[in-house]
Amino acid sequence: MAIRLFVFDAYGTLFDVTAAARRAAAEPGAEAWADRWTALAGQWRRKQLEYSWIRAVAGAHADFWQVTQDALDWTLEVEALADPQLRQRLLDLYFELPAFPEVPEVLGRLKDRGFALAILSNGSPAMLQAAVASAGIAPLLDAVLSVEEVGVFKPDPAVYAMVGARFGTAPAETGFVSSNGWDACAAAAFGFRSIWVNREGAPMDRLHGRPAQELSDLQALPSLAHEMENGKA
Figure (cartoon, rainbow, N blue to C red):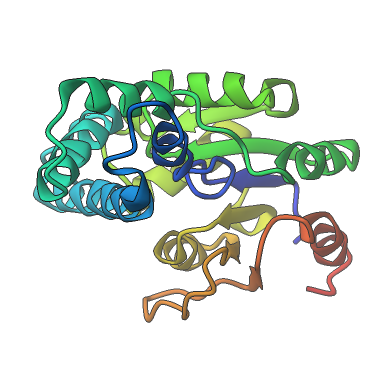
């Protein structure tokens, strides 16, 4: 079955989630903690994902902006950085996350090839709108889908089912692209042609699905899309 569209996870796949802490650490007044920005960014992201999974399993949904704030508060306490001004600055910067350098060109090439393009993300609509606008990629996207439409986070199958409901496609007609190994695995189990963008060189997750392809970043995706179109991948 031919691929008709590519659907992208947002955070970590299209948008650099470490950028908020990195940019804040480079600003005046951050000298006391600047050498710890990577630890802060990593713990914030890890806790953000953990809270989303726990809320999904517990049936205790809150939007991703609340989850993001809760994860940051935990991280700042762990790092002994309970500074209200720093907290607000990090949250403000999270609404301005840049896209990875290759993203605009890759999306443009896929769009020129006639593929529909969409985001499917845990992010709240306001978060996603801000990130897409900040990155300047809105004209390249046919849809930005937030889990708020179904009220549960990934990897619940109801989230992946949003794609077919929006585009009228079968799972096998969708190339699903995520930098989160667990997300790529769950999408594969759902039936998507899943592609894991393994930016960190991590081992494959041992889960109930396995991505069809693995890339180190998005640069090779247009070539891979051509192979998938022609049944070579």
